[in-house]
Length: 163
Image (cartoon, rainbow, N blue to C red):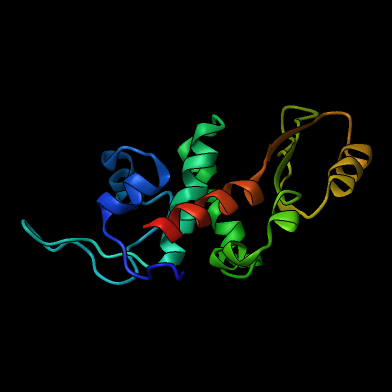
């Protein structure tokens, strides 16, 4: 069973279990950098058309938003992932055993002084050992957001196949 390649807002809303207005806000908000790959709405009665990569970006944006991150931080993370990672839709190809061990780590080193700019980093961790290593080697004043993106994308893949 194959996955669809073209999506409209209502389909993505059902797939991600997100209100349609939130999808539109992700696409309309410049901070996220998500644009429909196939067609932008051009007035009343027209539809936005998305590709599979858009669905994966919107899913990640939603999971980050649900983790409590602000919109500008979510946008920054999406830009980092786009710049350093293969397309997100490749994560849909992972087998369940590999997917369940994939995490997205957002690390921020806290401020040490008034003028110190915190360092932030985004990386994919491919095993629980990678997570443990990150925690062991991090500075004492670091903060983390750890998302089980592999399991989330595997679940998304199951829902896509039913669509």
